[in-house]
Image 1 (cartoon, helix red, strand yellow):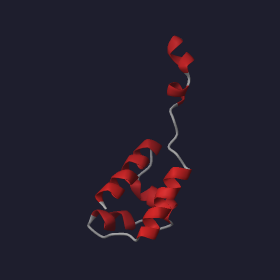
Image 2 (cartoon, rainbow, N blue to C red):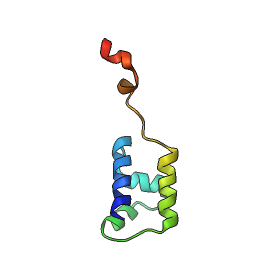
Image 3 (cartoon, helix red, strand yellow):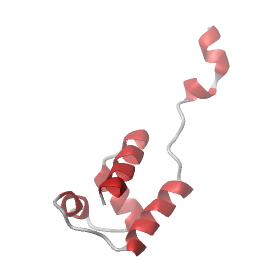
Image 4 (spheres, rainbow, N blue to C red):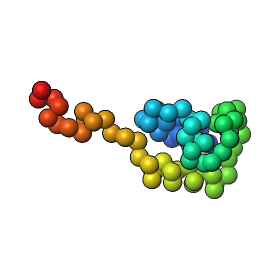
Length: 74
């Protein structure tokens, strides 16, 4: 479960979101779910797969500067 929470935290940080928001959007779960998971509750494999699928289908945005090699030449 710790690895799963770390995946959500990393994705949320890369997207500029709170982990709670990711869980709400990806898992279609309530806002208190993230706090419950941090307190030791677990989730079903179905929910974990749904969230991981959402993360895979909606990759974190790449910074425009990193994507534009001409930006350093200016």
